[in-house]
Length: 561
Image (cartoon, rainbow, N blue to C red; front, side, top):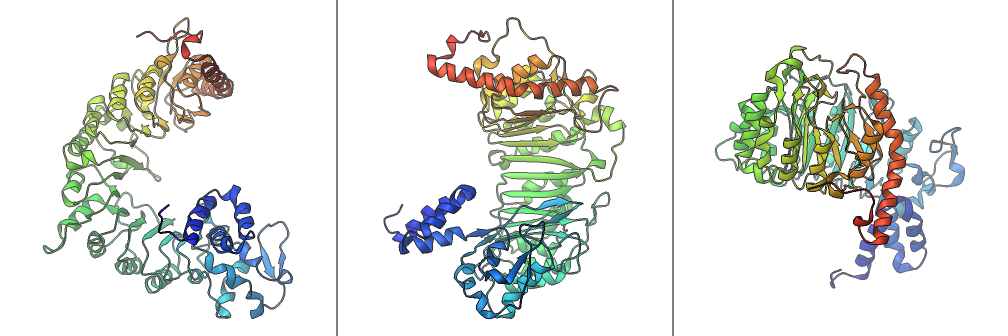
């Protein structure tokens, strides 16, 4: 640590790392706070830095004030009239809270947050304001839902809004009559927001006409935010004047909005001549796209920064043709983005749409090695996600070229979630051996979703694939509608390449490429049953290698060069 830091600052840095391990170190921080006066303040600051419910605050109040509700750990209701003296301990702790965050739980198509459990919670939030007591005066991060049990918001979210708030994440269900009022409260109270996420539910799909309605109150709010570093509102259409405002923000790095690429490009082309180059520091961009046309190609021309992550979500009714995909990839490979792009995702938004059957069999909708070949010129690519409901005709040679071209690859997801590779006549062309280059050339690989032909002849005696190369990061494989013949040999092969593999997901979708998929399903189920045993065997082999000093003592022969 720097020699200029004072003792309290050094302790704050140390205790911050203890706080990061939430489950193991909360008791340690509490004990440190009791150790001495020097430790007390920084330890309490770290202990109270983040909370996920209102229960800790209730416990600061007298025991006779609340009764627990039956069959609930956190719900409490008022037992007697609350007096100002009940908040004596409150003020000592509540100012230390910097973050309120908990994971949303999806139930019945709406989000519930354990921060709010009943009307008693709403009443509890209003209590401090009634007694002129500050509620979270130094709050900086808030992750919360604006509705409870699927009903329009009745929760006094305003109790959380403070000028110090920098990170706000909302989950809103429309129609919500309180949302406009919330936007106005945010505009007046939280001008220093840097990270703003607003996800919506039941707002209606923009497909096929792609006309989500803008929300004037939301637009008015965004126009007042000049310190934004991140804006995510994937289901809200942003008006042109708001995009103009965002394009001039020097700190904006992440942008995810519900606008189509065509509209977005047209808006940026209409910027006043005296404006600075748009989006000077933008790194992450996520947009809708009706089809991969010239407007998508124009993105590179209208954005002045070097994009590192690009996500395009297309309507499943407008599946991109092979030629359009090839042209788009070729454009990426020939621009300045080819040296900066690390994450590329093209996703289909299906909604209730049904893909026309001719798309499954048309040669215009088949992705071949030639289609993806331009992407090999992206040396920094780490994550490729092509969630396209069309046929892929890749082979071992192409997968090997991809592995060699992208040594930093950490995630590879190719093919639609339904495993549409099975529609190609003859099935998938990538065999189990095609996975070997990924293990040899991509040491950071963690996620793999691909379709295989696991019906293959295994050598006798068995040989170790990839000359003993292994990947210990991959714990789960998604193999779509991969075919299989011998579960024992497949489990042995996969566990040899991925010794920490826990499970394989395959043939889990409603659509199947054969009339009788039961054999394939049973085969992959058997693989999952065998994996724990093979995982233990691989662990024993690694221990044995370390003890005897090398793989050459293992009786299983190595693969020949």
